[in-house]
Length: 265
Image (cartoon, rainbow, N blue to C red; front, side, top):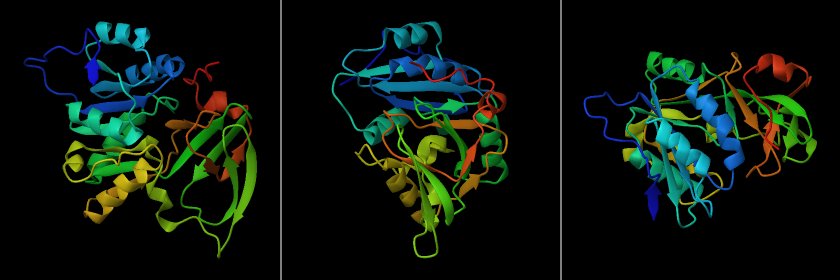
């Protein structure tokens, strides 16, 4: 059963719907949510933020935020759900023309949605994602940059608590469609969800979704993050490993992402 926070979003009356519905499935990550809320509030587009939480107890912090800001809609589940199912439920509640994924443990710069929605419209696309992005593993203090276009060459493998290396080559390449994955940066038209939904799974729910989008003939584009728009975090509680094409000096993290407040203890 999904229940809205006591002071959930009231009727909008004559107000226009938001351009972007930001969706965040979460579980047992309340300590991450204040920093993510600040990322959401800094966005330079008209937005609403929908959070579905199936932790054992609802977040009092999120309930208070929803009571204070009508753009925030917080739902608490009394039973556990997969990430894919939570995304579907949030999309069903969304009112925006566009859907944006904000994962609960990542950092999004204030210009992120402004830039992503601009590119989506200018190129007439149905879905946009990042093909390159910055990443940070706080446990190992690894700061890197991933280029999904680079299917061969030396890569770093991040599992949250460890960093190793692997060399991809002609006979062991990253798949050509690998660029489509990493759903933390998906921004897409809500109308896509009439033909493609997320599977009821916790891992790789983005893969099955995007494959159906592509096979349905929808226009998908991938953009390089040359403006330091997003910082993907890999930590011990991350649900999957990640690759990084480059390792960067750690001192650059604060310079490139001045809005990032650090990993919550």
